[in-house]
Length: 304
Image 1 (tube, helix red, strand yellow):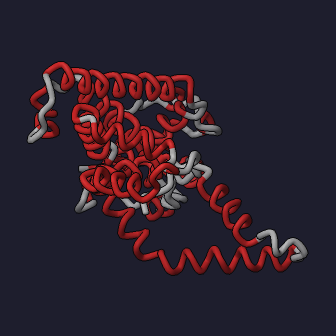
Image 2 (cartoon, helix red, strand yellow):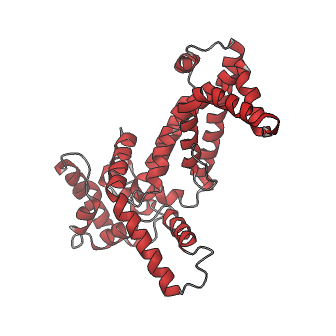
Image 3 (tube, one colour):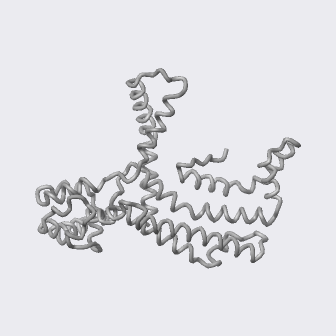
């Protein structure tokens, strides 16, 4: 069965598009069989699909559009999985959004040659091809406008996410060197200039040079600087792993809905909490290794 998109889970829509792109070649014959089987009682939706798939231009246009979306949505799927994960990504969120912005702009400006592969083997007129490419460009432009608003005034914490990168030594090369510049990190004004200068000019760069992969373990790094940078290290450990999503809260509500079914209304609060605890940890344990591997692969793909 094809995936059933959920209004509150964006990736479910993209996953459905990828499924339809993979199986699109089977739909025409399947719909014909449905029409033959149902006869006069054929649902209106099936009749509409039958008409669309028997119109050569419409069917091929749909195939191209679905194929383009299936291919282009992969980056968004990876990012959404990362943002909804339980791994801390607070110091990387702003960079991911900037990279996504550049990715959207680049794809909105692609010429026909970049999309020619999607039209191979299809008999579409130049006018239809141009119409499809215009729709793709418009979609990217709409996405760019929405992301631009999100990164300006649409996300109240965007300035915090921009500044919190300072707690990762990898970002010090292109961030401001003055304490007073960090106005959106609560408590940062109390950081002594000497502490900030020591981290910014010496301790941070030294840790980067000592790292074989160019990635610093922030937990180890800031734990080791508690004595030398007492105020800055406290702020770093407080804010570098701030939760950037409500995924856990939504998952918790979903679990409660599953456990507290219509046949369990007399369950006590203690038993309800115990069952939710067991259900959550059973799922977490059974899928822990796959989740970790998938997360690490997605992180590598995004950073590459």
